[in-house]
Image (cartoon, rainbow, N blue to C red; front, side):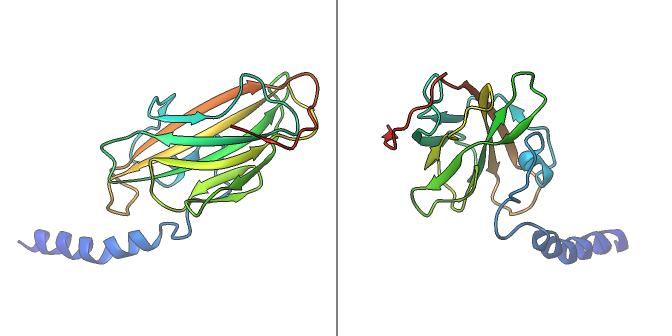
Length: 183
């Protein structure tokens, strides 16, 4: 009986404290390319190469300086709520150097952006943004690292399913000076 009371008391006391340790302002901007959402939602391994998480709007090859309308789709029907983070990185030909690539722009209040990264501010199944490719072709390709949190809605780091996806695209050989947005 005493054990049950102690466990119950611990749950009542620690649950609000555990929720307070979460990031009320959203996922940390400095999440690593390899850790992503698993830094905070650590109960299970990330589902890598997840078909539930997709980026649309990228051409087969990226043109320097071009702007692209991207849509991030997270099709996880069992999630009570969802969140995402995306980052663009330049990759050197030998893979030894990775740097931030381009600039993200939000299209509405469902995401916020910082440089080469964007994260959701509201649960959704789709998020829309603009990504502008870098003007200089100092890398072989650009990698888009995408993380999705299919949360169970209890606002804790437990019981959520983390999805990860990477999309790597080569640069076109010649930069394009166009400032138009590709559909």
